[in-house]
Image (cartoon, rainbow, N blue to C red; front, side, top):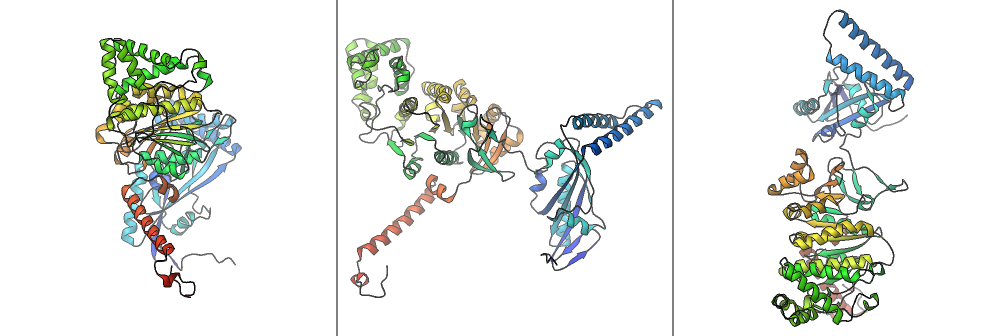
Length: 605
């Protein structure tokens, strides 16, 4: 005899059961709304009280379904004709039912759907009668707000409770007939998750774990490299976890073989790079320099490499000088840049491109020798970066390697005035590395605090060109920023957003929510979600706006220790490490001879 676990006793009442020390009552859904959307039953699943929900599904064989629909259509048509003969007006409900029955019959005949007998039961649990009545009323209110009709299981309380146990027994058999599409909206009681992406061969592409669905708790898997393009844009106010989520995705992508480069203005990715054996380039420190005159080493760009380099130097100097250059200044600067390369022995002949490139000081020399007022003015503006206080930043040959599976350009040591040109120069070094890779592979470029570069028109144009060309190099551009105005207020910024197939929004400030809602086409619920989201909660959008999901980023303890930048957590970890180090020094130093003596039986370490 099977000895199944269960309550010690059950006391049956008219509408409730006393199951051990608590009470329970069951409600039956007898009426459903005419039209529903996926996940429409989610409010019942999210009910804060103790509620058991049971959905019983029994498929109807197609011959039986076809015969039943035929009889139903005959009854409806007979009713319509009888009313017409008696001079009655058409009944809209009968007309709608007849049209639905006809459409369903044709779908079943074509094999596009099936019919199912469906029963939905709700069992409410509470510790006493008053709480049970209150909880049952709350469940009834939620059901009625969903346009459902519910009824109590009067004198059938025990069969009702048994129907909601995980036994698969429908002891009430109070059913309605659903078709495939209607049934799909009821299961699994949650909002729709992102679709499973597939590769070109039709196999599923899993991607990496971004977090958990905020509604259903299901894992949210996303693969940026399976989308139309591999770019992403992450917008959020400060302190909401945008960099945390970016680092979490980066860490998980590294485990899949993706290489990455990071522009890090706040040194938030340094600990991550050190933990995974990456390379950190600390711009602004002594002996670390990137030469803007360096030519790419890729042979694919050999035909116009020098021309492209001259154009980049125009962009870089525009950002460096902090002002848009007039036509006269551009003409003088173009002539001076070409003259600087010629003095270094570099011409349009590709065979000369392996020679040592010039520096900013060489450009200043050529400008001073030009003799024009415009050239002298440009040379004066370059003095801080050639012989002045910032000469060590951009004036000199490149002194650091920029290759590796993870390269982080740490810019925290730079003054605010030169952060934007340093970001641009680092991006250029990354792009030259991407275009000269010996073998193709997935690569991710992360630009954190991108507002520092996008507030400058020339910097925004460089990012836009990179976003357009990255896909051809199997490279994704991930832009992370906290200033929505710098991104969405300009046509270039909006173009960058439109070229991002992955869009992530975290908590937004009330002052920026109108701009965000307009540009990302958010509904009222999504807008309210972003205004009240907690740290780590995000809205993931696909570039075509067809799929959206609210998620909560989650990290394993080991991942969290590597990517967190919370000052309190870092201080606690540093204190614990210092304590462990002191204990190790004491044990290894053997300050007490009696403890270190091997003859002592009771040694203490």
